[in-house]
Length: 305
Image (cartoon, rainbow, N blue to C red; front, side, top):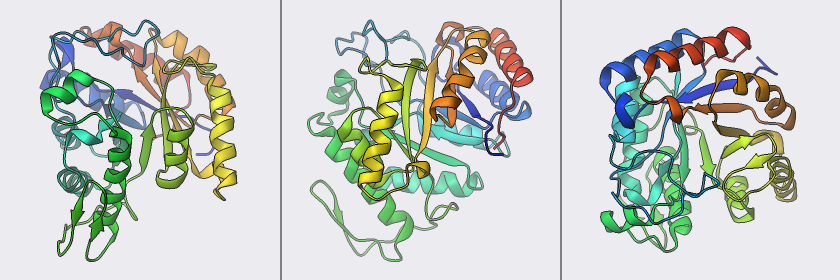
């Protein structure tokens, strides 16, 4: 369905809405209304005091209550896979350094098999230093570690006899079966911004995932989304890759259905192929969230899973 925007939304995995009942109802509502995908973010624990600036708000303040509920990402997506049939299931994003890549590679492959090939792997290096410290995971060189995670996953998911010799991880004489249903592997989107991130996308990923307030703004670096897309496309061409093979997914921190409907054509025009809707202001009101999703589904053509 070329030319029709893919639209997904963030599952209510934090705050008062983080209950099995709400998650089932919202996931099935999204599937029944024709949304393409549902997504979850990734925190293992939440510090009660956060000094690390949040990179996706202009104020630098974290947008959720750090003392509220926070369901684990892999468990949540696996749960949703069991109560849906066709909607795609994505990470926005999984923080690679928090877990060993052999463990996450196995979990993702298993989830892809059990969901009949519906997983999308959004991956990033993380931002919350206090969470790194609590987990005993070094935050230094986290992007180098993340890059190596992706290489480990691809080896596990594609090689007959996986072997890997990296700076942080090494293994040989192992197998990890079954491999994912999607071939050669589930789509990988990298979250972040800047030329170093774009280089990794061009070399290793199927897409870019970025947080945006409006079509001409990117929260994380106060950048311009149009200019960033031009830079990404130029770097792809210089590396001999067709920019059209890089899918652009934008997370919208938006407050109303009207604002989404107003901005959606502009995102399409500049080359965004998927929107992930996040409505933190309504995290405690499932009825209001359902009305927002109903209005968006009824007033715009959206691409199904």
